[in-house]
Amino acid sequence: MTDQSSAIETWLQENAERRLESLKAFLRIPSISALPEHAADCRAAAAWVAADLRSSGIEHVEVSETGGHPVVYGDWLHADGAPTVLIYCHYDVQPVDPLDMWESAPFDPIIRDGRILARGAADDKGQLHLHLRAIEALMATRGRLPVNLRIVFEGEEEFGSQNLDAWLVANRDRLRADVAVISDTAFFQGNVPAITISLRGLMYCQVDVTGPTVDVHSGGFGGVVENPANALARIITGLKGPDGKVLVPGFYDDVVPLTEADRAALAALPLDEEAYRLEIGVPALVGEAGYTVLERRGARPTLDVNGIWGGFQGEGSKTIIPAHAHAKVSCRLVAKQDPHRIFALVRDHVLALAPVGVRVEVQNLHGGRPSLTPIDHPATRAAARALEATFGRAPVYLREGGSIPVTASFESILGLSTVLLGFSNPDDNAHAPNESLVLANHETGIRTVIRMFDELASTGLG
Image (cartoon, rainbow, N blue to C red; front, top):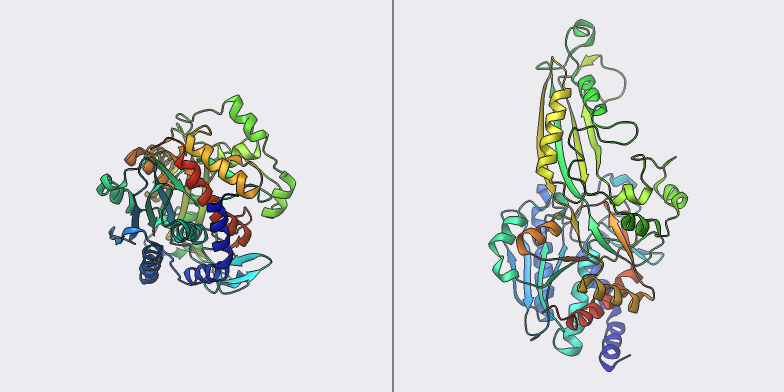
């Protein structure tokens, strides 16, 4: 251990209790971006982050307006000759329903079995927080950073980053960097350190089917008018076959096939499929025929119904033909698939499936492009060395099924490759009740970020 790393370790140990209280304070802010009643909480979270950055010595910190929830920006640019790294995380969180399934209040963090439980603990406040603490530790012990740093912490990731692209375009000049690092991903099954090299994109739409102007009596009108709920059910079953294949014409046209090397790399990952099935709590794992679980989970496109409603849903019976029925449908997309084109294909197919007697509309809610960063990128290798040095084993490389739209935006708008260096445990219950983060991941993650900055300083990227 060098004198510098020893000093950092001593400082981290001396400040461990204060660091944990800081994380708890951040998690107490109910920054639910999708719910308008929490707009003030999102702004409070942004202000909290900005104040923390200023206290550590980050410069030009501002809570930047976007037309929605603000972006927190800051920089430190005094490492002559070193690369410039753009760090991205998000301070907003998902809604907490169903509230009755939480074991504790979602915004009152508790420690249990080596984890901290709270909404945002893993996704993504806990991961943002470890970057704050890594920066603080470096500035406190060295008085400087080993790399130039630009910071972008946003507040709309959990509902599509609707205003971020325009903000990136408007701030393109001051966001110049050599690489981006995003911490919003997880380790592999068994909490094995991992670097995510690809993310799927997203197309999210809503299908609205309307029939009579009001609900009508099923005895007086059954057999005379088309039932919107029946019509929607027929539309939904026409989108995907029982073999898992999406039936939308043209859906697979732009999919880049997996190479034999891609398939071999996924096959080498130590997935216990039975343990994975039991963890999810389903009777069987299913999906597109001809592909493995890991291929289907991260490297193949999908189409799923995320919500469906319409008609009477109360206790007892009410014999009606509902006036309308609705579904939310999303597609996870892989390399070369364009969310706008996929929306158009899905919309056209839905309209083609619509029976006479109802009106059907399809709304494009939001989307994002897929992304892929090579394993041999110098920044990916630097992150891998940092993970191995701090967690004690070389990371595995994942293709994940989730979407982080900003990854593609960094590439298309800023021309940046992105390293997806996340630290949450794979059983973190992100987006679900009882979300948690293993505290050892948070603590070791701080040390990994510090080590990664040192590794990046010697890559020659700058």
